[in-house]
Length: 150
Image (cartoon, rainbow, N blue to C red; front, side, top):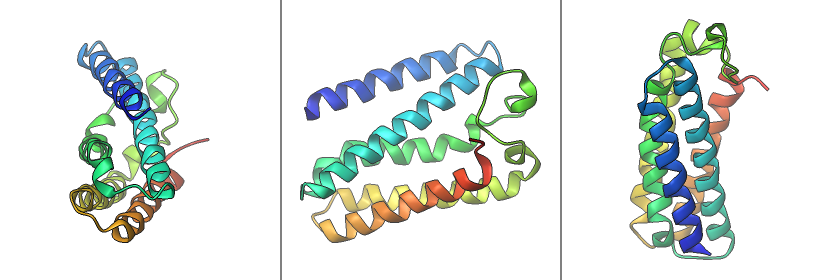
């Protein structure tokens, strides 16, 4: 099961990255960020399942490192011209661009929390890993509450 999940995540990352790499316009950027957001949800879900099953944090090194990389990429996935006024369906509110400083502050908090989670995945402190997963989840929700429509 774990190998299937990892293969799926890697495959979807490649597809999402390839869609974004074409650079043909805002649709590609929006599709890339939607894929990244979905994959971050998959990674968070897999980590929560591992936590609930009592697995060692080290079993989540790949997921936590992938999530940290994504967290650092988030601000760049919202360039000017890829918002609701682009003509492309997006769940991003206009405030992502009109309150860019606030958005980047929340994104930086998410990245820092995800970095710490990845650090903890290298160890064996399951309680600390679980607590940090909650911090990461909270930082995700904070940004979504402020900047995601729907």
